[in-house]
Structure formats: structure tokens, C-alpha cells
Image (cartoon, rainbow, N blue to C red; front, side, top):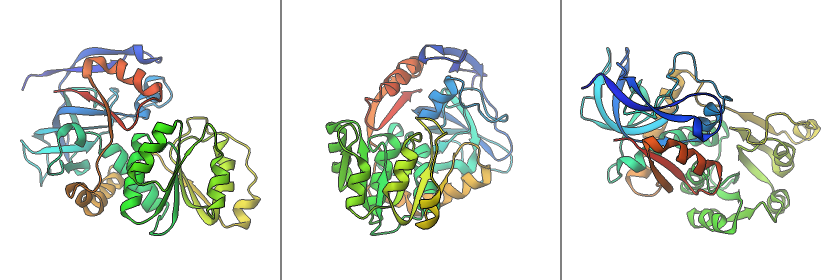
Length: 327
């Protein structure tokens, strides 16, 4: 293998135009790590936040954006077992996915599901890790419960709808157009609410309230989510597209025994992420292998066109996942 690689770096905080192709040293695996020659990398909202200077990578992570990808294992660090050079994997990455090669903990790798290409597999880790850990582990969603996911046509939303469907929940979602709502209902949502002309609080309360809500909007959605919850309901917050600060009356939270929780994936320990990976291998990968769930794909861009991919994402016109073709 050559000692350098093509990558895309963030030259300064700013808009998509600050993403610029560059040449970097090829990473070497540390203890417990593998190096993957990437074929595709997923594009996610945290990448855009990092680019804008709003989401600093951990001190031990690459400064390059990119939190998921798929490709071929080409090198093993000390202590790695269960993987070999030539294995095709998809992986949750600490960063560095906008590049030809990336190092990541071996325990954060999962096999490419049979019958699935590397392009689709590259879109699995970030969304599957996030949805499983927040909706099912943290939110405790059970069969028969009413589940509301905001942004149902996003990568997170389309994954959450499909998984909740397979585990027997009643699914409600919000989206910003009738076309997006139709996609959500086709995936299994009982009711998709166009938030531009309907109030999701009224719709969900008419159904008895949501047992679990997955929200990435924040801002004024927080008090509205509290109103939309059923008694003993759980609100799980994973992002704040409208900001993290809001005034909230906590009396209903106490009186109706509500739970407000949330998490971010990237700062969690390697061990915590490895445990999520094992849960996915047990509970989610069989569904992927059987073709019962699959990533919803929006568009593909060349690695050198990462700026165009970010511009596409920031229009919010996409449905499902955007990928970069690396290899």
C-alpha cells in the first residue's frame, strides 16, 4: 500500500465550500484497530456541524469528517481477532471517513449484510447505532406502543420507522412535504404528519399520546413534545437543529411521570459503542440479511465533491442517505 491517500479536509469553519480535497498520510492501525480501504462513506448532519465549527472531534480522533463507511480491511492492529485482511465490513468511525483509508476500532466493525452492496452498507452504522441505542435501549420502545419520530424522511427517520415496524410499534412521524410523508407511510408509518400544515401535538394526542418520541429538532419542539407524550412517556433527544435552550414547565413532567433523556453517539467510550455493535449484530443484522429492512438511498457524490454532498444535505430536500464514492 502506498503511504499517502486522497482525503477531504475542513480548511476552516464555514459552509460546504470549506471542504477541500487534500493528500494525507495513510493511517496505521493502533492496538485493537483495523485500517479499512473505504469504497463509500456516509454523509451525516454531525459532519456538517463539524465543518461549521459547532462540533469538535474528540482529541484522539482524526480531524477529517466522516463517521461511517464501508470497504475492505487491509491492516490489523495488535490484539485484533475475528477479522482478516480482505474482509468486507461497514464500520462506525471516530472520524476520518472522508478519505481512502481510515482506522477504527475493530469492535465497531460489522459484516456487510449478504446481498447488500458496499454503497448501501456504508449508510448503516451511524443510523443503526443511533436508532437502536436511543429508541430501543434508552427509550425502551415495545411492541404495540405509539412511537413518534421527527424528520421521518431523514436517514435516522427512515431507519427508525423500519425498525419500529419490525418490532411491532405503531409509528407516527413528521416530515416537511407530502412526498416525504408518502415515503414514510410506505415504509410503515401509520400516520405521517406534514408539519407545515398540521400540528403534530393535536394529531398524536388524538391517538392517546406517544409512548416514545425521537427528536432531533429541539428548540420549541421540546415543550410540544412534552404535550404530545402519553402518561409515562419517554422523550429521547439526539440533536438540536433549532437549538438546545428553551423554557420548559416541568410540572407536567412530574405529574405525568414523563422521562426526558437523550444521548450523542460520538463522545461515548469505545466499549459502549462495541456493546451497541454486538446488540446490532444480534437484533438488527438478521433483519438486514433477510431483506426486511434496508437503507433508503438519496444520492451519491464523488469524494472530491463532498462540498456538493453537504450542499445537498443542507437543502433538506433529500430523502434518506447521501453517500460519497471513495474507491
